Image (cartoon, rainbow, N blue to C red; front, side, top):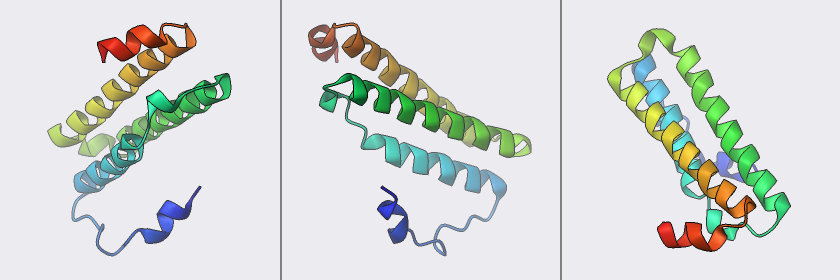
Length: 109
């Protein structure tokens, strides 16, 4: 599960400013979520796992915003808002799966 961390080059991701560090962290969350495949959800366990993943990502984003409170540049806020909006859309899509509207949600996508 954590094998993705073994390939990270920590020296190349050093940031020159706190705002740049915040954006890099938010971008990392975005990269992880980009591999999120809602169409692969088949069971209640899949739904629970997907919602847990989205909740965790949301909490991480909010922690970054809290940690970099004084460094909230337009870019930091824009990146965070974009990720939070995507998480909300994914939650809505998962709710469609859970409520049995799977076919409708696939058509509207």
